Length: 326
Ligand SMILES: [Zn+2]
Image (tube, rainbow, N blue to C red; front, side, top):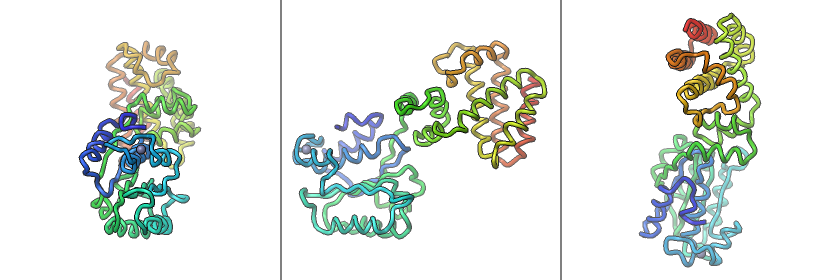
């Protein structure tokens, strides 16, 4: 592991590498970024560089510090993760107790707190004191996916490092390597840049079902009959508890129409619904380009109406009629 091996985070690696080289390491960092962007890996890399005996800005990977960090048992590096759903005050007290003497084997200690936004109020207050009064050389690295949920008092004591989004293809590759069905992973990664969120969608049954509904709806719309309204009433609204899923369905619909457009203008390598090429081709032949462009606008406008709490049934029916009138 080295600074260069931090996939997709060259910018962040270079900032941290430089601060170590120039001896300007902050005493507290907050690493902020979506799940899966490599915050923990980067935090361990920083800890290793700080604790390594032979570090000249880059951990040697061979000394006993580096080896102990690799095996997960260096006495001067502690990693706190939520117990259950939150980080509790006892965990922070335990951490402080562990640091009440100077570092065991090194000239400084490092602690990493994962999901620091999940601290209880008591834990956060306890951590705050700890951040304010480091009585010995210690570097804190706090990790979060929700930087906006961090107390300002904690934020102001940390150097905030924003991680970059993983590129689209890297996210798809990651989910694919975890065994998820690639076409569904592609759609999920297209709609959200958050790998954790995309993974949850891939795991859920409804995501694939929604896509099938969208496929059926687009066929019904093109057939111009009244089936489209029946699909909306019987298959979408009836099964949609509290209409939570409607924005997703409309996102899927936008990406479907975008696929029709990309098929027509020969940008097939950018298609999202890669497992539905036959249906895309069939529909793309039946639609004019202006109709598809207008369709995308109509669907986006419908999504925005529903976001403003307009009656979902009325909004969806209006959308279908607009699309069918072409
Ligand atoms: Zn080393």
